[in-house]
Length: 265
Image 1 (cartoon, one colour):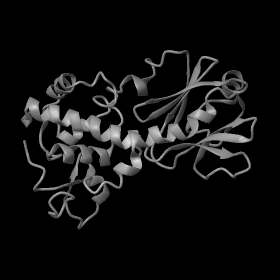
Image 2 (cartoon, rainbow, N blue to C red; image 1 turned 60 degrees about the vertical axis):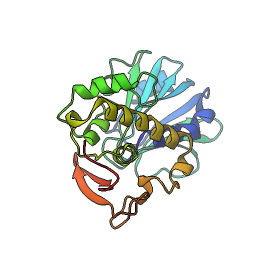
Image 3 (cartoon, rainbow, N blue to C red; image 1 turned 120 degrees about the horizontal axis):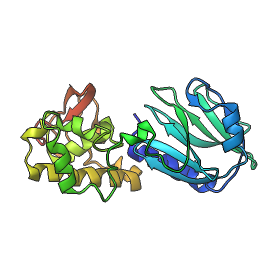
């Protein structure tokens, strides 16, 4: 499942090359999921340069100097990546943006969603998918007080359900939600209404710490012997106390926790 750190790493891999470059040709491989027709591509994308590359939650946004944006809904396994024009496209290819230098920026997705949308104008706030997104986990706006206030409006939710609610905090998926709960020492299935302000502030602290480290130091984080994310498999033990991990479904997702290190509220 695509999560915020995955999208950040994806953008880092192509943004330096693509920013400022002019798209010479647009190739649409899946007309059902790409909300862009040939006339729009000719008028707004072809012959125009990419101005900036942005992330909104788990969405990738390409802003063009023609004052339009392409928004990539990553779905469950979407990928935006650079490839040679001579390489055959994947069967799951959605769209390819070709550059004169012989490379293409491609988007492929075989999972749910995986759509591409064209938005005209600089203001993206009216676009429904982005308009409903909550705060970015790495934003300075996500203070402990702000997180506690948002949690107070969803007291019947589980802690994991709160973390994965895109209208509260954008970009957290299944695995990192489990990691945040583990690092904070709280069960993912506990009710938000049972948590104290001090416990919620601890969740906010580890939310930012986990995602920041996974974004900036992905390889180090995913080889850290103290992280739960590296042991999310049946029969594995807790990286701290070696107790066998417990597995359950929370908000319809396979969830792992340590019954000893993670306690109820």
